[in-house]
Structures are given as structure tokens and as C-alpha cells.
Image (tube, rainbow, N blue to C red; front, side, top):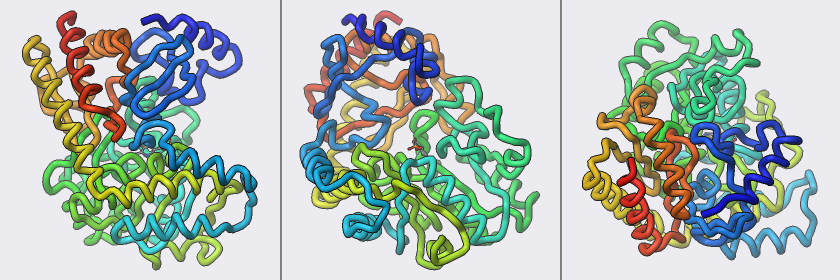
Length: 428
Ligand SMILES: *Cc1c(COP(=O)(O)O)cnc(C)c1O
């Protein structure tokens, strides 16, 4: 397949946009070559500026769980746009999506909508600090919670790919309040808590990690975090920006039956429009302005187009109780197929997967945290990535990313993908 026009468009973009992209993960820096410019997308497929059709395993990095241009979402946005695109005043639609989200997610009474996952996590931490009157937070190496200052400490995929896990521009003062722990290592967390008694406001975690490949929590890890938080007056923040409305109707809290104190959302909740949200029990949420002292605001928060898209998406997921099972079956089918052909071709690999998330790592050891994720062979990944691109399959241009299975993918698409992986891995 040729990607000539994309290369030309990228050269034009580079003149006026830093690196030619508006988010670094879109660049092909980790794999070489130039990014593909999309013209349109429908269902499981992307159509690029060169006229190629690609099977999409990124799906806008998560939101498009039902496939691209999902009809009820598109319809809702078009109809709302005719009535005005932003008011900065309350609309009934905001209450409708809030009520549905709160009904779907366990252990939360109220939700506040923002414009991105970054904003959701940033606001959740401010709320936790205000509520507990403590300053420090614990985050895990390789977990990504958006690009706000407190989180750019060993921050997962994008930051790792570009070699700046601890970004310049974050002050030492901010960085010192973020304590770094190892994912899946409870003892490490307990030690940090002990060394910072009564100073930690929150532990923020991707309850299933998705930004260093897909790394499910070890048995007992989330339960242990819950207990440590409860015992020490710390709020447990589940960053479900990737997993929310994806791994189960009620997210990871429902999947593993664990109660978080604050839950962050993004991606799926916006149906492909810019939306984030954070939710908690009433006592915590009432600490937010205008009821409480913790300030948080947004000119475009609760934007009618975004809320219409999000509501149509959540309604579709709420009405289709078999969807998460269906996605899991497709993922398992793909994982088994990849496993078979890579073994047959004597490739060294590990596959991690859960629900509709899957990642292939070119290393034999189990991938359980940032360190083990970083052991993967990037040269093999580059060949894998470009080989699949030639076959018309688009995975993320970084070895640290999760692939997302959508409802639009057919078993023919999955079989095609497995055959392509067989072909490509013969050339390693
Ligand atoms: C994508 C992501 C974010 C950031 O969301 P943006 O909308 O890109 O700001 C935060 N946390 C997790 C777990 C994510 O996957």
C-alpha cells in the first residue's frame, strides 16, 4: 500500500504545527515513517488520503467502542448542532447524561463533566486534596493520567515513547508532591504510605493499566490498595478514562467488585467528542464549587454536542447488555489466533488481554509493570507495525499502546488480521 499523499500532507503540517501533530502519540517517531492522514472512517475501517482502507485497532485511542460514525451518535450531534452549539447555560441534556452515567457506574452519586480525560484527572486530584486537606499523591510508573503537571512523572505511553517521562516545565515543587510506586506492587505502596504518614491525599491508578500496553491488576492488588486507602484516610481514585464503559457497564469497579472513592472518565463517555468527567459519592462531590470550596470550571463543559454524542453512546451501551461479552469473545478469538501464528513462526512474545483490550509484547517474560513492559524488543515491533500497515491494518505506532476491539469488527476482519500477522511475523 502507498501512503504518498499522507507523506505530503505531513510535510505541510510540519511547517505550521509542532511535529506536524496536535498530540505526540500520533507522530510515528517510535516506529519511523510518517503518520497517515485520515479522510473518513466508518465502522471498523479508516479511509486515508491515499484511498487506502485500513482495519482500525486504535479507534481514536479508545472512544469508538461501537465503531466509527456510529449512526445514533452522528444523528444526535447533527440534530443538536441545528439548535445551537454552545450556550454556557444549563441544558436538560446534561442532567440526562449525568443521571444515566450515575446509574451505570457503581458507588457514585454525582458526576461533573469536563472536556478531556486530562481535566478529569487533574480535577479529581484537586478535589481529593481539598477534601482530605493533604498535598501528596501516589501514582504508578507507566500509568498515564493526562498531561497535567502532577502526572508527568513516569507517565506511560506517549511520554515514554518520546523519552521525556519527567517533562521539563514541571516545577520541582509540583513534582515533589507526586510519589511514584510500582504497578502491581502493594508492598511498595505500603512503604510509601508509611514514610509519608497523614500526608497522602490520594492514590490514583489505572485499575487495568492501558498506557504501557495492557496490564491487568494482579489478584489482590486493587483490593490491597482499597484497604491501604481505607486504613490511612486516603482517597482511592480509579482513572477509568480508558476502561470506563469499556470493560463493563460500570467499569472496573463493577468488573472486580471494588469501591473507588473518585472515578475519572473520558474517551467512551464522549462518543468521540471531547468529553471527560469525574464522579464520586455525594459527600465528596459536594466539596466542589459552587457548593463547596474546591474550584473547578469550564466554558465549554457540558457542551450540547458533546453531551448529545455521549448520551447516545451510553444509551447504546446501556441497552445492549450482551455487548461486553461479545467484545470479550472477539478479543479472545484474536488473542488465540495471534498466539497460534506467532508460536508457529518461533517469535518471542507475550500477549496481555482483558475485555476489549489487548497488547502484544515482544518479550517472553510476563508483562506486569512498567519495567517488564519496557523490556519488549522495539526493533521487532517496528517491523510488526510497518508490516501490518502494508497489509492494511492500523495498530498504534508505539509498543506501549493497547489495541481496542470494537463491536464493528467482524470475525472476517479478525481472520484477515491473524493471516496478516502470520505473514508479517515470518519476516522477523
Ligand atoms: C487517555 C487517558 C487520559 C487522558 O485523557 P485525554 O482526553 O487524552 O486528556 C487519562 N487517563 C487515562 C487512563 C487515559 O487512557
